[in-house]
Image (cartoon, rainbow, N blue to C red; front, side):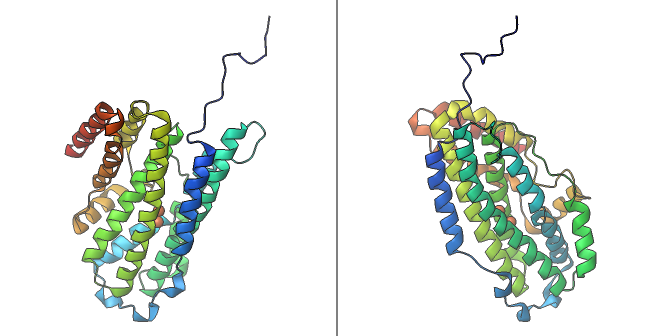
Length: 289
Ligand SMILES: [Fe+2]
Ligand SMILES: [Fe+2]
């Protein structure tokens, strides 16, 4: 006999973070974003000195334009993973996703600005022309963006590491770049990425507070073990390109893993010492590879 009643033991999974707390986190992040707004026209384009760009600078600018320009795909991924439409959504889950949406829109607006400012930079500096660049970006941009993660905390952790890695990279690139408009631009990008990182740190912290460190560390380890920068698997020539860039700027994206270790260590006093030590050792092993 078929019994279609829900199993009495069935309970929907609790949202990653309590919706009221998520509301606070997103409200703060959106407020910080609004008070640090800037526009593409604000840069001193008339001061641009393309003759000060090295071949490596030009190559790095092309690379990071591809990365920033994948924002439509990245946003689409998040909107699919945290839907805000459908009566099958539990109210709690909807409330969480609805609050997250406020952050995602503000964040996507900033990443979109990064894509626009780099596109404009390429044109103004004569690195490319509008038609060629539009087609080149379209070639990569239309490839589907996906992350291999199942649980929300993994998506948050991935983004935390990626935002930190991008921030560190822009700071590093700025120490070698000489062209003044590029230096100003990198400063602005790094500041925005630092803010994105701060939001995800707060979110992962809230998650750990709710679910416990021991239950979370396996997910965090899985993210670090499989971490690839966005587009690593789709952008033509990604690996050779990224190695050359890392060499030229003495950049190592695994430095960003330390940010996660520091976050987790913050919980080590509240009974999670063994889990925190476990993640620390795991990260050291990964970075030693
Ligand atoms: Fe960005
Ligand atoms: Fe970002």
